[in-house]
Image 1 (cartoon, rainbow, N blue to C red):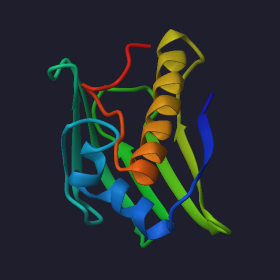
Image 2 (image 1 turned 180 degrees about the vertical axis):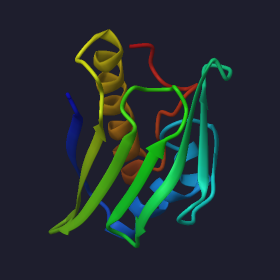
Image 3 (image 1 turned 90 degrees about the vertical axis):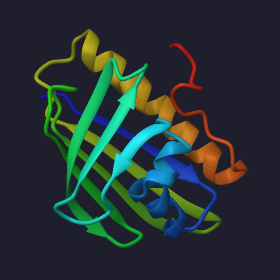
Amino acid sequence: MPDIMHRIKIPTPPERIYQALTTADGIRNWWTRDADIDSNIGGTGEFRFYGRRFVAKVNIDELIASSRVGWTVVNAAWDGKVIQFDVEADAGGSWLSFAHRGFKQADQNYAAATTRWGYYLVSLRRYLHTGQGMPNPNDTDI
């Protein structure tokens, strides 16, 4: 099964990245402005795009302060059901490793998802570095 994986350097401490991944306010600044999330293990998140034409729902499975966030996709948004963010401190900032696992095949849906995740991770970096991300609906049509 193909997995989406990205690794990006972000010039900010791990705590700020973790907050941007685990709070509705954080997610609304880099991924989608139409988002709700319960920041507790066992909680849920719902992320809506394009006037709610695309909705991703997740369960929050793992939260390790400032270092790991793990979700399971619980609707048909993607074939890949496991999403994980790992953050590690490094001189001058942090490294964010991202994985979206469990896709059945590397098809057009997989290609679209990997492109979009790359874009939104750059949006996350920009938000944390400059205060201005590029979340949906203010994103680019790619």
